[in-house]
Amino acid sequence: AVRNIHGKRGMAEKLQHALMPFAHLLSGLFPMSEYKAKRMEANFSRLRIAQTPQGYCSALLAKSMLLFAAGLLFIPLGFPWLFLVTAVAAVLSYFRGIQDIQKKVETQNRAIEAELPRLAETLNYSLQENRDLQKFFEKYRKVAGKELGAELDRLIIELKTGNQEAALRRMDARLGVPSFSALIAILCGVHRGVDQRVSLLVLEQDLRTRAR
Image 1 (cartoon, rainbow, N blue to C red):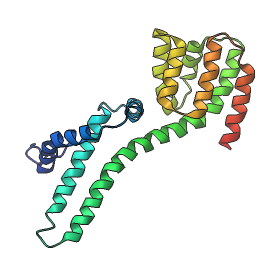
Image 2 (cartoon, helix red, strand yellow):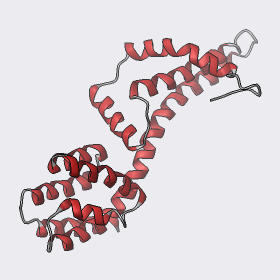
Image 3 (cartoon, helix red, strand yellow):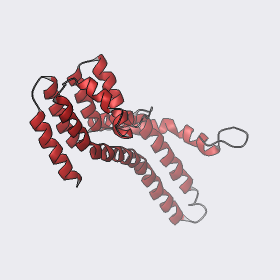
Image 4 (cartoon, one colour):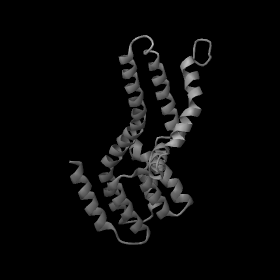
């Protein structure tokens, strides 16, 4: 938050706060689709963002409106072209805020995809001795990368407290990574008692080929 030397809220923050009701109203007039809302909720959950998608977008809109309003001051001063520049910047700042979320998620996805060949290989060896998925992920968590490790923490808790196949599918839905979806489909088969060693071997080779 922007605060002055006396610890009080700055004028820009006050104006942004004052514009929030109007921003909420505009967001309500142009609601996001259910699919987009669910996708953003999944992304927010992964990035540990406490806001709702609607609240986040409303805050971005309020900031953009503040920038747009500031640009209006250039018109009576005789600089209409500066108003146009500010108006464009206001629009870009809104969409940049939306894109920043997606970029952070894509960075995480790339890190997770890079680790999938090793995960598939380790899983293939482990399944030859034990098909307990919870124990496998608890062991693999110790060597997992930061991004995948954070997702495994949540998965392990869900594996302990609920239906394992449902936990796997929820993780798949959160990530939305096609190559990971293929792995989840195999793991669901393992959970049902199906021998998936050949499928895992094929998937591992395919993942390594893509990683080259």
